[in-house]
Image (cartoon, rainbow, N blue to C red; front, top):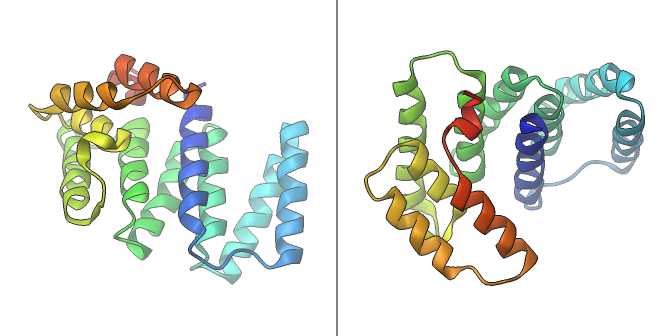
Amino acid sequence: MKNTLIGLLILVTLLASAAVFVFFTRPRQDRLDELMSSVAEEPAKLPELITFLDTEIAKSPEDFSLRSVRASVYSENGRPADALNDVEILVSQHPDNLNLAFIRCTLREKVGGPPREQHLDCYRDYLVRYEKIAAKPKDADPDYIVAALMAQLPEAEDLRRAYLSRLGDSEDDRRMRDLITNFRPEHLTGQ
């Protein structure tokens, strides 16, 4: 479930970001759609999808959309280290993309590895970038709230309360209220 949620977060965030980039050529997109559908119905076809993505990325290493999709596929299928490799490349290509910076931190947490302090530094770096780049107030952005909680900022709980107070009664707001109200760092780390 955690892999699916992180994968879904990656896919939605990255595809939303990809809207500003040139998307796939039609034949390539058709083939990708076909493979994605077949994997959804028959998970054993995952290697074929990954091979297709690998081949297309080798032809177009700067293609944001292809690498985004592969990162999402990796994450959804229990391969967070592979997803992180793609996201690291995307962050290096698009350093002002806050969504990528946030996803990188969540994947680093999921993968584990370096000391916890380095993971905290990733969230702190995201928060600094956010304050330089973002147009909306930090207490209005759930990613900022999660990063503040993960980085253990003293004002994180105040930011959480401010964010929650802005939510209405729509289904999306109820989902976000549940997510932010119940969020704990171990949700990302799996501990």
